Image 1 (cartoon, helix red, strand yellow):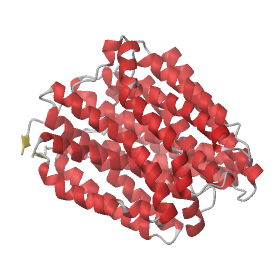
Image 2 (cartoon, rainbow, N blue to C red; image 1 turned 90 degrees about the vertical axis):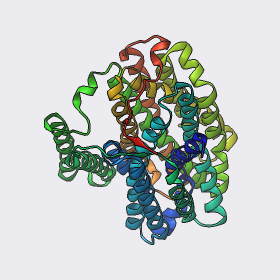
Image 3 (tube, rainbow, N blue to C red; image 1 turned 180 degrees about the horizontal axis):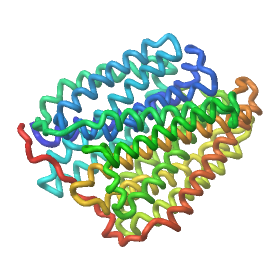
Image 4 (tube, rainbow, N blue to C red; image 1 turned 60 degrees about the vertical axis):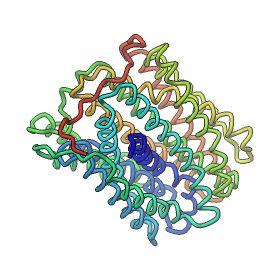
Length: 472
């Protein structure tokens, strides 16, 4: 078999992991009705996946190094299939959330092991590595686009469980193809299970506290205890990383130039972008009255623009101008699109209230995302590039989860929980878009003021070290 086939298998993994975050969007209202989710709790269908995925990404990378990337890749797909079956068969809200969390665990094993395998296959040939990385990178926006469209097709013409059932045959086919991938010999070393547990539990508790705060009260003892517990768990994680013999995230990595500012930008990017996508789906269906398929189709122009710019335009701009102006400018453009969306009306239309603003927001996202990744990686030495990549992916997921929780709480207080009351729903969604715009604007301003400048040449991707213990 050719190396091109290997690349397609790994790109398919990236495609599916990203699709898992977008395919559920248009199915959310149907799931809410069938499973009895409250408006405030519906976000857990998304956040359960994101918390497990983001919280365990670093552990997945460590396991990939120790156990062998192909083994972890195979295990990840097995777990993802199991979670998909649970999510598809769910008859209650808590079982659905459980299935989504299991899917997130699978994704956290798949993503870092797929990247490791890609580097193993092509690190010897920089030209071929560039081609492989282009295909792998294009799989992300393609997965997002396909997820939006397929979610609408399945929900409209079949039923919402099909957004999860689709992973079973694809997963089985991928498992059948894993024998084509290189086997990597395991290495000796320890696994920081306690570190992984504390960071994941801390993130989950923080999101839980923010979700419940509108009902319990922000100053209530329960809310303060939950937020204090989350802070204590995350502080414990940092202590473990400083004192542990083989930590998931050696704290010395933060001395890498631009890693801190890039991760702050990535956190705020996720905290603005994901809530926009979430509430835009709800506005289309619950206010404008779109069906699932029409809602998915309405988001295709936005996702199509993302795919075109990320694969054909942003890389050229990055080489010419460097990362800093694209990140800062992209976040400000995203903020402008979100501010435009905050003017949605109960009697609005797609052509006036959604399409132009969503395209502006998508343009901002497409300008910022890849430069943030490159800024985080460009200063990392060879032996820390993989860790830097894992951290910046994790911060995006963390920002997404916390941003969605906070803006859902804001939207709920402004009327987003009053189903059937179109003015109240619109007020709630408008407040969420405005809040996301503020988050994106802060990210853009901080980036332009705080990120160290670099020449365009400094944005070249570092060469990541891979194990030389490879057998095919």
